[in-house]
Amino acid sequence: MRTIAVVNQKGGVGKTTSVVNIGAGLTRLGYSVLLIDLDPQSHLTLSLSVEPDETRATMFDVLSDSAKLHQAIVDVEGMHLVPASLDLAQVDAVFSATSNWEFLLADALVDLPPVDFLLFDCPPNLGLLTVMSLCAAREVFIPLQPEFLALHGLGKLAETVGAVKQRLNPPLEITGIIATRYQKRKKLNREVIVKIREYFGDILFTTKIRDNIAVAEAPSFGQDIFRYSPHSNGALDYINLCREIAAQSGRNDMSAP
Image 1: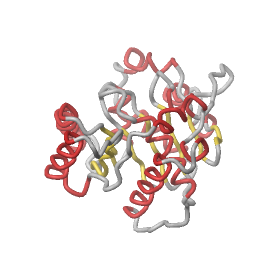
Image 2 (image 1 turned 90 degrees about the vertical axis):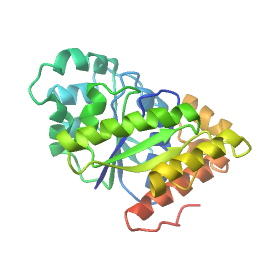
Image 3 (image 1 turned 180 degrees about the vertical axis):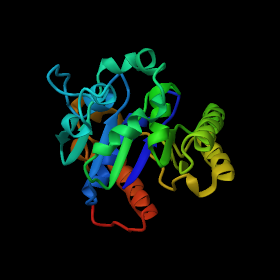
């Protein structure tokens, strides 16, 4: 199983969109996927048309040990999802004084059913929930828009990942940087890609997610890009990205259109 935290402390970079569409793309390639929504805004949950339900266990219930992980899993279009709720906004206040709070999420995974990929959709900050995900994951994917300010944020995030790796989770590595909302005609976008490649090498995925209206529209319909607009540039880009991710696992998947 590959356990991946999808992280960026800046909002609006396509983080949740990437989690949804990577999950859907990997599912199309034949993998079993579990998505965990760690954002109090519940954007991943809502993007998959899972509505709030007081009778349904959520990620907050799992962290507070009032439900087991398998009890919170919802099946959505071939994927598995642990939904979020606004209760996650209480995490800092509720758990910050708890001994070894950093490992609450990792401990909850003991109840994890077997899957090929586990993806954490982290909130757009470096608070407790993000640190928990970094302590539970083996890998980090960083979606970002190719702009110069993103380079500064990328450096800071890399420092945070390095600190967690050194002090709390030695196996943790940044294994993927995803360029989102890319426009080849923009010189700035091209220059930033070159800079990222210089500093991070092959960690930057070759596939770039082009700026595409269908990718932006799909969440409002509660659909991934493959269901919403299967012939769009967004669908083509995300399936190619998923093939790259699969190749990291030593398998070259060419089955999906």
